[in-house]
Each structure stands twice: as structure tokens, then as C-alpha cells.
Amino acid sequence: MLWSLFKIILFVAAIALVTMGAGILMETEGGVRIAIGATEFNMAPLQAVIAGVLLVIVIWLALIVFGLLVAFIRFVNGDETAISRYFDRSRERKGYEALAEGMMALASGEGSTAMTKAARAEKYLRRPELTNLLSAQAAEMTGDKRKAAQVYKRLLKDERTQFVGVRGIMKQKIEEGDTETAMKLAKKAFALKPRHNETQDLLLGLQAQNNDWKGARETLGAKLKYGALPRDVHKRRDAVLALSEAKGVMKDGNPIEAREAAIEANRLSPDLVPAAVMAARGYIEDGKPKYAARVLVKAWSAQPHPDIAAAFAEIAPEESPSERIKRFRALTKHRDGDPETRMLVAELNIAAEDYPAARKALGDLPDTMPSQRALTLLAAIERGEGATDHDVRALLARAVTAPRGPQWVCESCNHVHAAWLPVCNNCDGFDTLAWKPAPAAEDAVPAGTEMLPLVVGNETAEIAQADEEAADMVEAKEEDEPTVLEGEVVKEADEKPIIH
Image (tube, rainbow, N blue to C red; front, top):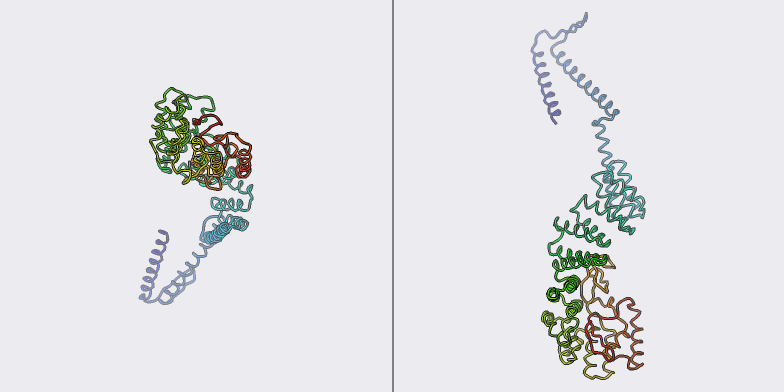
């Protein structure tokens, strides 16, 4: 810009000098005489002015020609010139047009066209950080995984595109099922961009699938550190990871360390049922029943669950039914209107053979919220109060096809699990299982032959035959689900009910 300003000033100064010279010549008498050797030129003032102007024009044209010659030599030599800039602008225009057309083709699902346009854009632009990504995505769209992998590897060589290359190869490995390599690549991508939310989630999911609970807790801490996770959600998921870590330690044969990890998980999230149960059993083994009771009562207040009641019963396994009812009041006084609490109280009273109290506790649950467990308890009450076998069989027939009630259901894919897991078996979702009624299509229906002996025993062949027919109808629906309800009343033909 300064050079252009200098040339303008020089041009104006030259014009001013020429004008002044022409004025002086016009006022000079006698004209101008120019002698070159033996030759003389005599010009009148006007002729001298014209000659001067022509001389300036010739010099100017000579300078232009000389400049063009120098520019051509520099262009041939590879230096940047106005000519080279012209061609560069033309190439850039064509390259960006090809790049835009390639992106539109990619968005339209035309993978082959996108690859062709990417190659054309690379030819004109020579910007691999832009064109290689387009080529890789187009190759994946056309199903050419090998070509896409090659392009991603080229992206690894440039620091600006290294993260994109690692992420692309990582996703390919996940699709191939090579989770071990994918996790290594996820760690690399996380090191390059620790704030990248998608990478954090992928790494956390891969670590959970590979039971790397310690690494998963570190990744979860990074999500909290970089503001990608609310603190309350972090505490809940950290508790899930701590519980999973405790189960892993238990499998390795370290019960003391597992107990401490379970207690830590319960401290982080008191409403996490599996953590509360595991921590309580750890306290029981350690000879601290009061601590176990405190943990279970707190968990029951947040979420009543049959596993909590079973663990609470383990605190004093030798107590009588009446003693158990009295001790369980510390648990059942919380959430007394919850269906789980009402069924638990009914079950306790059935075990104590106090059938009116059991019926009162059960209330209208079999009608308003019918479930296999509620109807089975009602059948046990009817049996205890001397009802006919026909009435008991009718209730059990309803129980066979009734909803099972709350189960561990994945909130992402609605898959039903027999037991709580940190990662869904169906969709690999982390911390997505909730204790709630399953959708109708997913509800598990156990075989009826497993339920009849619970209350009526094997008194007649007619009862067994009727139940087997009902079981055949529902067996095709769900074959792999457990057949005994957790926390249900178990009673053989001549035995008293007990709580499992």
C-alpha cells in the first residue's frame, strides 16, 4: 500500500515538473537548440514542449514493457506476481466451487459425486485439511471403508487435523467391534481435546463396557471438571461406577476392599438400591447390624425395592414372624402408601398367619394395580382364610397373565433386565436402568407351573394340567426371564409362608 502511495506521489510530482518545464519553455524566446555531436536540432518552444511530452510517454511505455518483462521472468521462475495471483484466484474459485458441490452431494447422499468433487477440489485448492475430510466421509457413504481409513491416516500427519483422523478411525473400530483398539484411540482423542463432549461420552462408554471402572471414574471426573456434567448427576454416576468396581473386586476375591467400595458407592448415592444392599450386607458381615439397618431404611425411603427388604431380613435371620413384623416397622413406616410397602406388610402378616391384617395391608392393589405378586399374595390370604380351591385357582390364573410389576428397565431402549447392571445389555447405555413397570410388549411372564405349588401344592392332577396349559400359552412370549418373583411369599403344601 505504501509503495502504491509513493508511485502516485511520484506521478503527480512528475506531472507538476513537466507542466512547470513546459511553461518555462513557452516563455523562453528563441526556442531550444539541442546539439548531438555534429548534428543540431533547433525547435521552437511549442515543438520543444511536444517533444518533451513524447519523450515522457516513451520512457513510461519503456518502463511498463520492462516491468512486464521482469514480471514474466519472475512468473516463469515461480515467484508471486500479479499474473500468478490472477491464476491463483481462478484456481481458488474453481476449487471452492468443487468443494461446495461436494458438500452438497454428500448432504444429498451422492457419495460417488462427492468423491469426484473432493478430488477436483484437492487439485485446485491443495488444502488437504478440507478435502481429505470430504473424501473420507464420501468413502464411508459409498461403503469404501478401506479408502476412508487411508484418508483418516493422512489426516493424522497434520496437527490441525489429527483429532479428526483419530476420531474417524475410532468410530470405524467401534463399528467393527474392536472395542480394545477403539478405547485406545478414544484415550488419544481425549488427550487431544479433553473438552470434547462426544469423545468424553464415547470413552466413558467404552471403559464401562470393558469393566475399566477406575478409568471410567477418571473420565467422569474430567466431565465434571470441564463443565459437561452437573454435580448431582456426577455423584450418581460415580456411585454407579464405584458399585461396579466393588463387584469386580468381589469377583477377584477381595471382600474387605469390595465392602469399602460398596459403602463408598452408597455414600455417594444413598438411593442406588444395589449399592445400599451390597453395603448393608458388608456391614452385616462386619458385625454392624445397626449400620446395615440405617443404610437400608434410607434407601427404602428413597426407593422401596424387594432386594432392600430381603437384605433387611438378613440382619436377623433367626427371628420369629412376630418379631420380624415389629423390627420391620422401622422400614415400613416410610413410604407406607407405596405398593411395595403394602405388599411387604401383607407378606409379613401372612408369614405370621395374621390374614386379616395381611388383607388390610394389601387393600385394593389386586384390583387397581394387579400384578403377579399382588395376586399371588391375595391367593395366599384366601388360602389361609379357608377359601375353596376353585377361588384360589381363579386368582392364580389371573396371576399367570398379569403384569409382573416393576422391573429393571432401560430408559433408553425399554429392554428388561433380570438384575441391575451399570450398562444396558441391549443398547450399551450407561446408568440407564430404572426400577419401573415394563412396557406391555416387554413384560416378562413366568411359567404358571412354578406358581401353583406356592399356595395350593399338588393336590390334584386337574390343577397342574390347567396350569400347564396356561404356561404353554405364555412360554413362547418370554423364555429367558426368571420364574420366581423376588420377595414373593413361598409356601409349600403344608409349610408356613416365609420371606425370601
